[in-house]
Length: 482
Image 1 (cartoon, rainbow, N blue to C red):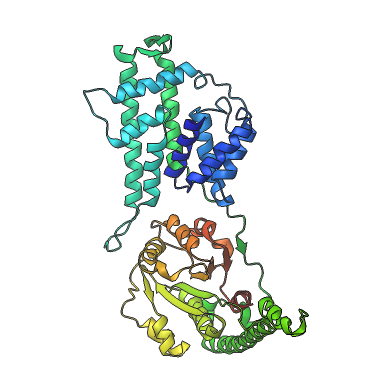
Image 2 (image 1 turned 90 degrees about the vertical axis):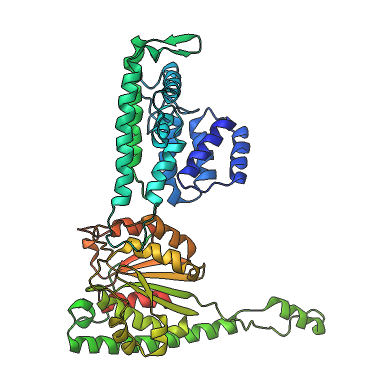
């Protein structure tokens, strides 16, 4: 049992799951106290130790089914994806599985042609060892492109997928040729699998190759049941409050700015009172006990803590292309006006790459800073918006700005012009910070239409909400501060 578990753990790690040695030892110890022949118990023990959060369960289930059902390694070999018995006898014959494993090894050892690393990974996959193939597929999802490329596209990932598909076709041809040759006499135990069974072996090999293609194309999204979505905003302002920022007239923009200024003052006062109350309301137990010594142990003097509540840090990443900027300018305005409520506010803007603008807001008032940012020579308004490359460059250059006290706020419509969205990079950013909030100026019914990647990105956010008018913006800021 131990070799099987260790092999499964290697496959999980190859797919990006983080499993420590201590967790493997705990799992083996628990399996000694349970019956591994009961698959429900077996699967529960492995899930509890290796899929440590709901976000990892989708990937774990896929690997569990591949390894223990389709590769038939240990328990559960005779059951289907939903635990039901499988009637197809092609892949249920242990001798045929062993024969295929040995056949793939013989094919790999042929001297007339040395297989490439990818072909060898496919041969191992067909022989029951999927680790190398899983690593090859994972490398496609994790690969990064050079940020300085003049022409941006998804060719990197597409080329990787195409290479695997071509390798599948090449391996398929080699398997057919091998099973039809006299060399296809494979000894398994006390029996020999002769050419008369070559047809069954070919079908089993084809079944494994099709499963490899399914694994390549199957990209399970993490379970994000805790995702918060902004509901209908409170109708604080019936007229100007419901007008999208992109459609505001000059008079309406002045009115919105007045409303925002009033809310900034109100929220600063509420925040100040909240911190003051925290200083008065928390008892310092140690100092109170020390003071009680002069009263024979009776706590006559109650000492309160002077330490205020810890303030969070804010990092904003704002898309400034097109109509998105109309929302970003008001958002940045409010956040910098509320600096007293946060320990630190740092802002970055982007079209195809992130640029820090924190110093501009610190040196000027919000409105002047907005005008200067719009005229910043570093911005290329002719470039296509590229969220994936922006996330990658932000991670490479500014990851130190994120810690477990930081709230990362992304403001943008998630439209990346059909370029590589690079969701794993966004997942890494989420793991580094306290929470990740995405504000989208578009209405939620438009998410996922055209080149919108919001359905993909929302899986990696703690909160995703539409924020395209004054009422929605005030609702969010009130939740953020209070």
